[in-house]
Image (cartoon, rainbow, N blue to C red; front, side, top):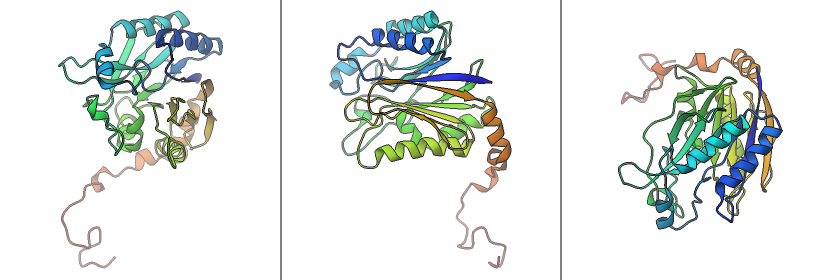
Length: 281
C-alpha cells in the first residue's frame, strides 16, 4: 500500500508566527498529495530562547498551539506529526514532546523525549524534563507509525522496542534539531540508515536547517537505500513509500525473527563464557 510522507524542513520563523508557518506548509503538502506531514524538533518554541522564556511559553498538549495545528491538519486532510514545548503538569521543567494527529484533527498520541542531550556545550536537562516511556505505534490507515526525537536516534533500543511490540511499526519518525559539527551530518545519515536496516523498515529524519543544525532531512528504506534527502535550506521534501518493501525486506532477511533474547544477558561467569564446559569449542 503506497502513501506519501512530506518532511517539513523549516526554520523557526523570525516573526514567531509558528501557526502561520504550519498552515502554509500543510497547504503545500496537501497540494503535493501527502498523507503524512512531519515537522522537526523545536517547532513550537526555539530551543535557543533564554531559559525563562522557554519555560514560560510551554503549553499543555491540547492547548492553543495543539488546537491550531490539529485544526490545520483537519482542514488539509493530513496526518501530522508536530513537536511542542509541553508544560509539565507537576510544575517542573517542560517536556520536549512530539504529537501525532490524524486527518480529522484528532490527537492519536503524544511522546515526551526520553533521552536528553547532555554534552560539554548543551545540557537539555537545564530547561526540560525527560519523559519516562515510549509511545506505542500509532495505527494510521496507510502505516503503523513510531516516533522518537533527535538524540533518541542514538539509542537503537527505542526503535527495536516499537518494532517488536504487539502493534509493531512500519515507519519510524525522528523529528530533530541535529546539531552541526565535525562528522555530525555523516552520523545523522548513518544512524538513520542503521535503524532502517536493522529493523527492515522506513525511517524518516526531519531536521531543522537553522544556523547550527545540519538540515538534510531524509528517508531511508528497509534495506538501507536512501529514498530522498534535503539540503541545508528550508524545503518540503515529499517521498512515496510502499509497505510492500517492508514485507519484502523482512522476508528476505528475517533478523527480527532470529533474535535470541535468551542469549543477550551477561553474567559473572568465567572467561570461557559462551564456550562448552571444559573451555574447548
